[in-house]
Image (cartoon, rainbow, N blue to C red; front, side, top):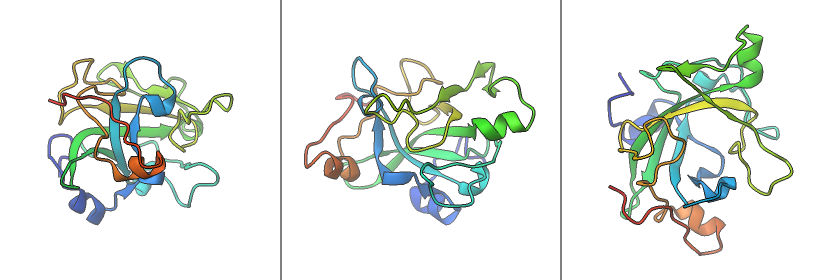
Amino acid sequence: MDRGKTKIDVKVALAEGYIPAPGSMCETSSMMGRAGPDMAMGVHYFRPDMLGISGPPNPRVDGIGTHTDFLKPAILIYEPQADGSLQLVAVENLVFKKAWHAAGHKEPPSFMGVPYDSMEDDPATAADEAHHFAPHYDRHVWVHRENPIGVFAQFNPRVDCEHSKANHLALGGRTRHAAHSKR
């Protein structure tokens, strides 16, 4: 099935092998140490087989996959809703830097002429810029929620994490959200 255009329900995604990213957090720009207005990505669900992941994080999620097909994305990104459901807002592909370069690639992958973003945790900061993943390249595509800062931007000001139970618990009962006007 063409996941680039189809709005896939999270129950279907789970049945097809997608699993929640570590912590099931709804990712925001402030969680990653970004200055400026707080924007969100959402909750990530990924296919370990497409990313070449064969074991649990040790200490980070790592893999050997080089999958870049956006018609069958390796990652689906959902926004938590007030009723507890999740709404698909974006798709993403990710390749681990070590595997990508070991496959003979000199440059990061690109999609529609746009290079993937380089993600690597900076141990000197409190934020985890790589979302508990080993150094990687990734590309977000906002195909299910309009993004005024660009279809390939990492964050979307029209997505928020206000209804994320995982974020609420991690912040000691406080809710941190990105945008007040989603759509």
